[in-house]
Image (cartoon, rainbow over all chains, first blue to last red; front, side):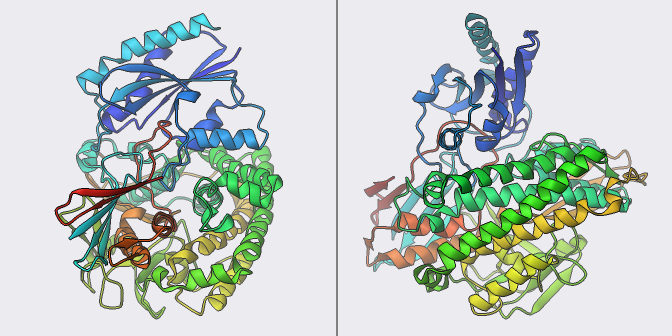
Length: 152
Length: 484
């Protein structure tokens, strides 16, 4: 089974980059040739392109919520497919729906999200993470490693 | 004063929103689009190695990394006082064509075009790519996917990964093309020209042959008589990668044509207290508030801005379509915001034809792709991003570290015009405090035409918040909420 883990975020936008940091950390522990680890500084259709052809995709990302630093595991069914109003922001969920409709055969059978909660998206450039969000990384890495070893 | 707020318009909850202000009679007085302005880039850039800037700036935005990459690379050419070899210029431009191909296809078919193809009054759930596929057929849908991927493939062959290019160097480019790659790109470019023809045919059949749509394009709420801006070549034809910045007035006459080095002398940025955004305007005309007309320095960029600011397209099929657009819509300039969509397709044809020209140029496989750099200094770079003019400006110290960096991004250039377009669209549907059905649609159509890029934060999650209109009474208490 081929699995891809992708860390999503903007690497120069402070806590926004937390998913990318998770992917970088994870690379130190994963040596299995059936597991690919990548970073994506983009979303939607571009993200879909990266996961096509894998049996399973694990996406590490941030999510706006109340308990900053908390980690949650979500499946595709947990995520609303309501239309994004960002005119250039076709979401991953919409992209997936469309690909299915067009008969795309390379969509992973399983898509899982590990999200780290932020209170709000940062609006200032920088490469450092806040203490609370940064300290969630080892735990997220551990959870993803467990996910990878359970279902391989 | 009543306040109507539409929020959020982006995934950056709490940042981007549309606020519509009513006067005492309940009619629309003004509307503002608030776009999250990411702060601190200048400080972030200070002290970094100049040659890292094309990579760093391509990360600013998950939507237009290629535009930032080359605006930055060109600023470095200038800062290191070096001209890239002809072959390197052509390779950069070819890669740039790939980027415009995939970005314009994405906007027309997935994001903005559904308003027309599916219909402006269709339910929002249908006004998306799935609705487009339903209306035009599965085969067209497959072609759309295929050609968007071609644009990305052209970009990634030349630039490494499509979304994080790594090829631009001061004085050139890091990679030449081999035989197989050249053949591959030839086939893709040919196919993109055919696809552009079909896209224009779809636009003709669905939009132009429908009087109701043409009347909507020409209707008052969507007219804005601003100045127009875009890059042009020596013959004043649209050019995405290089040239001089040309500004034309409300009669289509040239107001000014300048080298990017002079942007500080010609463009000023206005800061309004209600927005993080800066509103650029023409310095010589001046800031007169959110007004159009010859007395107001506000200008438009992007597909329609570029076509209006030029005297044609440099490739034959696109130029024929350019002429047709002006004939159909009543001469130059075209002031209808909704004509951005048509202009976008004309540009899709232009870059597809240009990619074909470049890949058939014998010089494109040359390996002379880098010239040695000179001493570090100050540099300016400009390109036409898919959504408008993008400027990078750096000052380097003698160790080639960044002392100062300033960027003017495309959506910022359109900030004033977008707010005005939203206001005018809202005026048509809010009268004497009564909000007609269709407010959301009409306002969305107005700002969507510009293809604005709001979010520099890139996320897969969540699926996007629903669109909301909040209506407040004079005391700014929430009295009504419409939600999609």
